[in-house]
Amino acid sequence: MQKDLNSDTGDKWRKSKTYFIIGYVFLLAMALFWSVDSSIVLILFSIAFYFLFLGFYTRPSNQKKYDPYKTTSTRSGDPSTTFADTLKNILQKKPAAPKYSSRTSATATPEVQRRIVLLFVFGVFVVFFIFFIGSVFFNSSDGIDADVYYFDEAEQQYWSGNYDSAYINYRRAMQANDQSVEAMEGYGRVLTARDQADSALLMFDKALAINPDFARATYSKALVYFNQEKNDDAITLLTPVLERNPEYYDAMLLIGDCYFAQKKYGDALIWYANAYENGGIRSQALCYRLAYLYDEKENYPIAIDLYKETLSYDTTVIEIYKRLGELLPNEDGNYYRTQVVRLQQTN
Image (tube, rainbow, N blue to C red; front, side, top):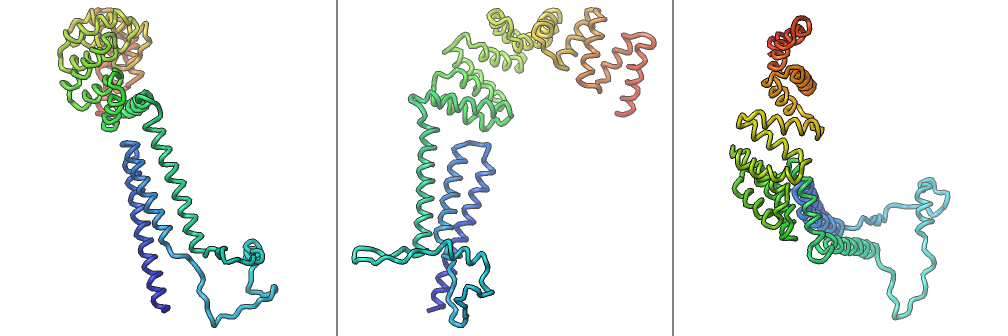
């Protein structure tokens, strides 16, 4: 009989251990897919919780076995009894058992009590899970909040370079609201990043069909044309956008890039200078372009200042040191000529 009990306990421990291992595996999978999609994380967490619950539920109770050969003293002064044991006995001391009638059940065993607690915890989790699902997917009518939620998630993922997750959430935003031009434009940007230019253009056109004045979609479409070296098409799109939005500096830089690619340096200079002076746009690329354009126009004082500003962003551009060494005479140019020699030796 004792062997049967030990065998049954061993089976319970093995089953409990298996459930725990499965639960930990799903927790690990949840950690791996954490940034992919919130619904996948929720599903994996639910499965992991379920198996961990089964692990606790099937685990045999840790009851002490009776040893007929072990003698204990009932005296309070027994040195084998620690203070912690005494305190535990006091706290767990139960009042005298009442007399039970034929309709009254006896007190539940520790094993039954343990399972009742575990079932209660599992029930609380189920209720929480239901409320969580409802708050995410049924937060408002007609999916109004859903499309905003998915769009915000997609935007964060897109700008952090997580295009696969952004792709999924832009699609969900469009499914929640088929008139969301913002989601369409964002989805088009993801398609552009994935080298699906034709599909991206279709998505931008779809957004512009709903809202022809949506400047961001026009800009994104023009950017695709610029990357395809269709500079005239991009300029045609951007010109009316800048007429309606004279402070749209990203579009201003893009149209300047289109003119620069066509070697129409006078037009490029107008747009670049506007972005630099009125928009406060500062970057190595813009300063370098402006310095080069003013240098071409033989406006050397401005070109020199812009070349120096470019070096404040990147001090390793040998061509700028060379040009400054040529533009600045005598001692003023010695520093830059010396830097050219140093960088050439380093490289």
